[in-house]
Every structure is written in structure tokens, then in C-alpha cells.
Length: 135
Image 1 (cartoon, rainbow, N blue to C red):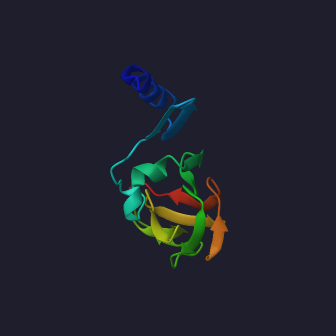
Image 2 (cartoon, rainbow, N blue to C red):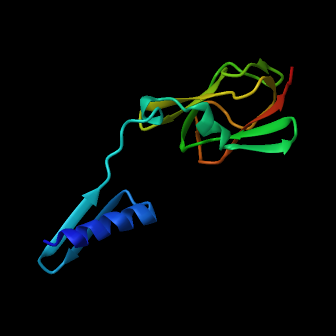
């Protein structure tokens, strides 16, 4: 087994952002898999910084929150016209028996709720429309 060939495969994995690679050529066979430290996502909640990437601004003070993952959504006790603060729980998305908490990044008012509790959501699906309140 040539160590240089394996190093090239590792470089290829990094370049192409691969998690796993398996190559077989005659009697030569190599299987590579990256291991990651547990992130906060693996611990059952979504960091606000992860959620921010899933927002889209409609107007300067209106923000649309979309699902950061596929799963079953469980709404908190929010309703339209509810006042929310930064860090308030909006809902949880259950994926693979783990409940991932989705929290607000803004102080504001819920303008619309596009989802129903105990129903499936897709990645990127619209969940909430929030009017931000600036102090």
C-alpha cells in the first residue's frame, strides 16, 4: 500500500468536502471516513448563528424563518400577534428522535405561522414571519 496514494485521497476528500471515500482497484482497497467532534447541533439544539443562515429578509424589519432541517415540527404556544424576545423558543424540529430547539434571533411580533404542530417540515420550508422591533 502506497502512503502517497492515501495522502492524495485524503487531499481529495478535503478539496471536494467529502465525509467518506472508498476506493477499490484490483487488490488495492482503501476506505476513509472523517470523524467529527460532537457539535451543538448533535446535542439537540440549533445555535442562533445556524438559524440566521436560514432567514430571509423580505423587508428591512420583516424576517422569514425557514426550517434548518427535515423533521417533524412541534410548535411552542405561539400564535399570530404574539410578542417574542430574542432567544424565545419558536418551535422544535424532531429529527431522528432528537428535538432541535429553534429560537428567535430577534425581538418582534409573529405576523404569520406557515406550519402546523406535529406535521413534517422540509429543509428551507417557510415556518414563521416575524416583524422585528428595534429599541
